[in-house]
Amino acid sequence: MTGKKSSLLELDARTKKRNAAEKRFQYFGIGAVTVGLLFLIVLLTTIVSNGTRAFTQTFVTFELVLDTAEIEAAEASFVKTSKYRDIITAQLAAKVEELGFETELTSADDLKQIFSSGAAGTLREYVLANPESIGTTEVFKFRTSSRVDGYSKGRVTRESLARDKNLAPAALDLVDQMQEAGLVDRSFNWTFITGSDASESRPEQAGIGVSMIGSFFMMLVVLVFALPIGVAASIYLEEFAPKNRLTDIIEVNISNLAAVPSIVFGILGLAVFIQFAHLPQSAPLVGGLVLTLMTLPTIIISTRASLKSVPPSIREAALGVGASKMQTVFHHVLPLAMPGILTGTIIGLAQALGETAPLLLIGMVGFIASNYPEGVASGFLDPNSAMPAQIFEWAKRADPAYYERAWGGIIVLLGFLMTMNMIAILMRRRFERRW
Image (cartoon, rainbow, N blue to C red; front, side, top):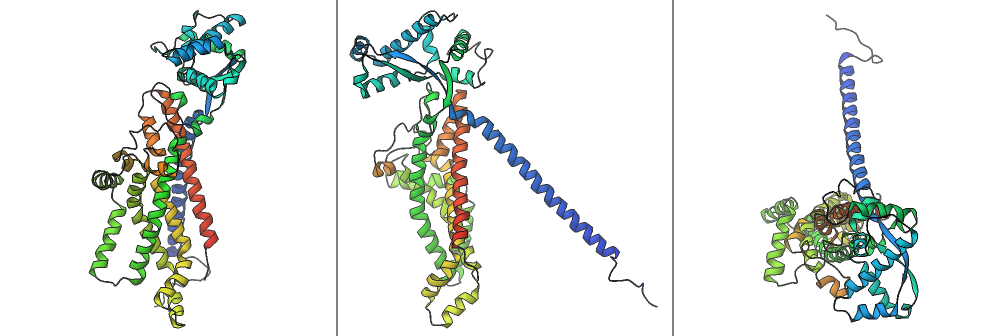
């Protein structure tokens, strides 16, 4: 009895079923990628839409007469900033009356709520830095309060000010008239990029610049310690260590450390570096050491994977022509594995850059960094903050202006992370060797 004849040119039922299953798997893969891209687009759109407003600031611009008698009286006063604030509001009140604006804010004291509380300090700093300007008329740009800035950006409405004691709804009518006259406008907020954190009452002056410096010094510490230690440990475990129970235990523990929650490393850093070694609290040096401990497993695992990817024939060829074991590793294996090592290192640094939990334990979240470090040593040893810690601090504050700056800080942090990943890709292509 003969079976049913079939042709190689025709698909049988089994082949059609297998091809249909393959097509379905391809569609599932395309669907998964599409859903992932949609979520990514939604995430990036949310971040950009909420964070871009932090990069602009509303200013009041007008001419200010620096009267000699008023400046001398302000400097002689016990509360200097209060006197400088009176100078600003009095001359703005005169300007409002001169332009004929209709407003319920009749006194100079009523106009204080339009300005940032740091406007008086800005004027005093300018006068002290430029004493020759006393007795002249200068054009000043003063930051508005967070409520006025929020109104300009659409974050604050008249309805929301009904129970707000910081700004009267009548002030918004005056702001509208000042905007039409060119006295109020929005421009790029360089202070957000270069400035430092501010108190709860001055969110419009808060910036992320100082915490960027803190993150930079921390990443230097992580790079200096994590890269040589991680690469050296990987080379030993992969190329020189004997395969026995001890090395098996070490490998298992390294893999387990890579999965340990980051806050555990923060507790370890608090106990060892601060309470035992008495290193300065909130310092980038301590933060860098904690993040080094957290990053080491990632670097070791990625470096070992890169070393394993080098074909055994490379090692055998080097040994065959008389090279020693160390010469084989450092002259042949390591250069070929370098792209993967650099990629793993930069990815580990990027992961460390975005960590907040370990920094919370060593005090870098609670510290308000208000000044740039004076030198390299102070950059490592003086208390400072870091970008993720600063974002966390802003997000938990009550003023909506700080919430807006938290989104802006996320954009800056994402910019750093994307830059580091681009560097990893470029370095991988630059050092990649094909065999």
